[in-house]
Image (cartoon, rainbow, N blue to C red; front, side, top):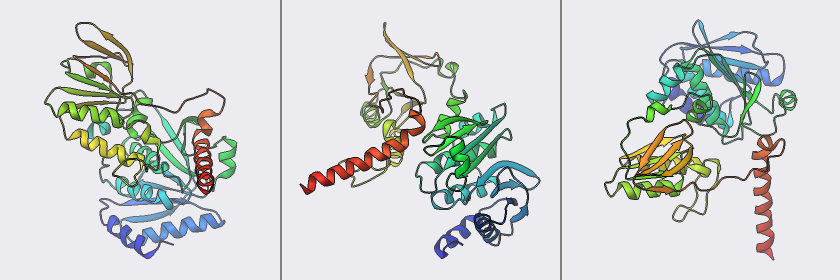
Length: 350
């Protein structure tokens, strides 16, 4: 089922498995079930550390990735190929015991989450943003036994997607209720669950010389130029990268022929980290006041002080607050982009 080149790459990754894993498959007599069985058996044949068991899961066809004698809660209701193939490979490695590539502080936050959280993410195998969400929630499931996650291919589970009013992907449901639409990082998930940094985490911080509010390209640039002068610099950002995180293709950044929004944001963050800049991500500024120093109050109640403030909050998509706006947002943006491209082509022909 896998192409020769992909199979060769997968074989290299499977050599990194640290412990035995079990793939539990819930299959019927339909074509998709047969395709899932073919994929699972092909992968299992490539490593002695992978075994396959038949079982009955909530959805058929689907399969789960587990440790021996322990269910991790990671389920794929569909065939994770296309953009989701990486999600499958990472799930295999992480369930086997290979540590996910996230900061230790995030790992600690995930492990400390209490309560039951059952996530479901509707995806399309052609969606560029879906794998980031799937991989983040899979990591959380690996780290915390109280968290489960199911990737649901909307094309295969079309009836369920329509019944649950899924109009755009990725669409995340938590404990049966719609929870988030669009790309979201593991840090943003933690913040939305109320597990982000608390006010006391910002206590006893010395005043900054320059405090930048906003973590997009403009804010990053301002912070870098300030830090290069050797002065104490900080960034407060609701989401580092800003609006470009929702942009797939960027072709108007001079000197860069083409790139993607998340890729550019990652490059910005790496550049910022080259300097002594205190980055406070996932923090929304609530109030600005000028006393002896400027004071920025965050929504979590923390107060930051600085001799000077740079406001670079950039732009955001304007909401019109109509029913279904959040669910349809990504789909509408795609339609708008298509219309714009076609309009431009017509104008050019004229």
